[in-house]
Length: 230
Image (tube, rainbow, N blue to C red; front, side, top):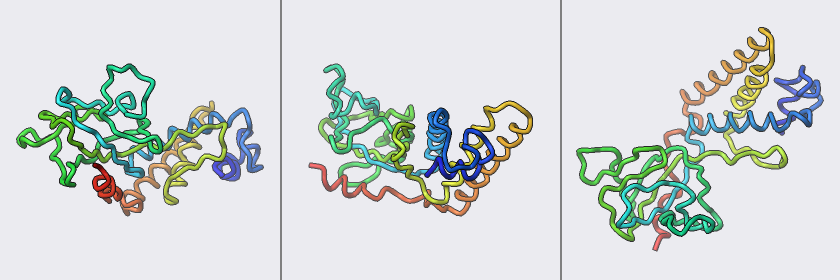
């Protein structure tokens, strides 16, 4: 569907778009998917389009928790010296898709203060993927709500789903078109690239201004996650 929309629309006059036939040239599909992954990364960083919860079990000896798959229970390949304090499951493994920590909750559902040096109960985020717990309580969980990435698209699997709100589909198309024209020589192509990028920015601004993707909603499955922990 992505290839078809680009071929019929923004890339219809280019050989890469097979002159509007509804197809993308075979030797250009990997490039288009790379541009799509770049666009999805930007959109998922700009808007909270995917929010997930990570369960972390505190260790007495650890105050800085690196939120990496190498510390996940499902990672059985890493060295035994890596403490597995991230308690994930085989049906939902943690795959390093964290963009930003949003909130951290205790087992009773109460939120921890974050980055407040005047609060003795505050936790800290010195880096985007590190949670600092100054006084860890061994064996007790904390639940980390985080902004997640979109799954990487693979040009060899054209049946992969692109999970974005309808109102941002045109923004993704415009971003991909911008990248295509940006990498083509000539002032005319540079002008077209700028036009597509401006359209991308205008759509994003409108969506944000009208809160069309409910960018301010809280995690929906956090209570389920907390109640299910034992």
